[in-house]
Amino acid sequence: MKQGHTGVCRWTAIWILIVTTLLSLSLLTNCGGDDSAADPDGDTDAESGGETDNPAPSPSACPSGIVTNGFSLRWERLNHRISWYKLHPFLNACDPPSVAGATLDAAFIGGNFTTGEQMDDTPLLDYRYQTAHSPDILGFATGKADFALSAPENQAEQQVDVSLVQESLTGFDHYAVLVTGVEYDTRVEQGPDYPDDYDPAHGYTSRGIGAWCKDVTLSDDGATLSFTAGLRFDHAPSDRANMNRAIPEAKTKGALYYTVVGVENGALQTATVDYTLRYPEPVPLEDQVIEHAATDLRRVEIARDPDLPDALVGVTAFNFVLDPDAEADAEGDVPIGYYIREFAVLAELAEWETGSETGIVDFDGYASNATGFFAFYPLISQFTGEVAVIQYDGVSPSTFQLQEAFSTGAQSFELVVK
Image 1 (cartoon, rainbow, N blue to C red):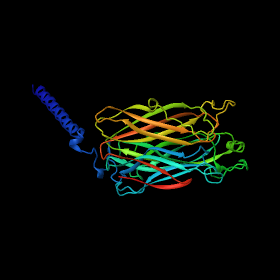
Image 2 (image 1 turned 135 degrees about the horizontal axis):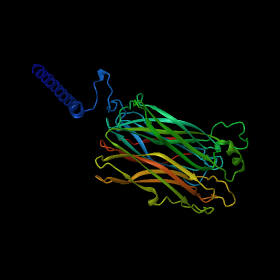
Image 3 (image 1 turned 30 degrees about the horizontal axis):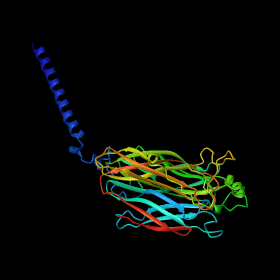
Image 4 (image 1 turned 120 degrees about the vertical axis):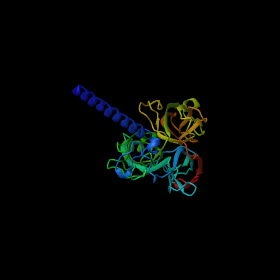
């Protein structure tokens, strides 16, 4: 009996120990599992060296930025070759935009028929942008990727690694990489096989331009953001024999200006467009009107978070391919190049009602070879692109438009920021 009683007591004590242990573990799990009770920020004690599952954004992140919504460089009178095409906006400081200066560097040259050597023309600038300032919610960093573009590839890609630690941009929930500016410059030294009878500074007729930021990835430790940057400047032959001989050997300097946007407690959505437009051959000495794409081609429905009222709209990719199937020249079987009057890109929210779970993005890609002189070929333009919508709840962004005429060459313009 004593031995049996002792065994019962021993098992009773063991079960009490097990139950007590389970209750203790349950209490510990409940306290640690409720972030609002344990740590509102979801952070661990920094002095312990522990890592956080959801770190707060860096307090040193730049809270102010410029997002390009649209751009256009257009010739006032005629269409031309492209020698230099540049748009580069930048914010001079991370202070609130009301006290920080912002600038747009623009340049447009279309060969010696725009510079006064043979005749002149006037560049017309149209630049659309948003400025935003929301500490602890938005963070911004800018950069530049340089390219050497050569025929016949006419495009290049490279991986860009952004140190979020150096940019003080760690810890955000979402990141977007936006194209905020581009540059194409033919006025560079050429190779030994480039013919002597054509000046690269006079530029080339074009089969299109493009820029893109894709395949954005974040390192496991959250310290590095990587993406693929691409740039395209497609040299293509037209009516000038010496230019056509030079094009297979042509080299062009390019640059893509990008902005990394981090958003905390926000949402990121993208939308794409792909459409081809066909226009008749311009009538000589008549200034033909090249219409923009129809609304139904440009507009795309996008999901939205109804609880996030504010939105930044930026371009992540655009690409113009002119004469994509070599149909423009009735007497030839290769794609041709165009004298360009205008390249333009515009992304905006067409419908964005408060509380709605969907919205409409309008993404307009416009190319024109219109002229009051000679244009040679009917324009066939395929436009593809991707737009990003960054939603957040903070200080609403301000939207601006800059329209200016300037002398052929380069000029800087002051941007309004609030």
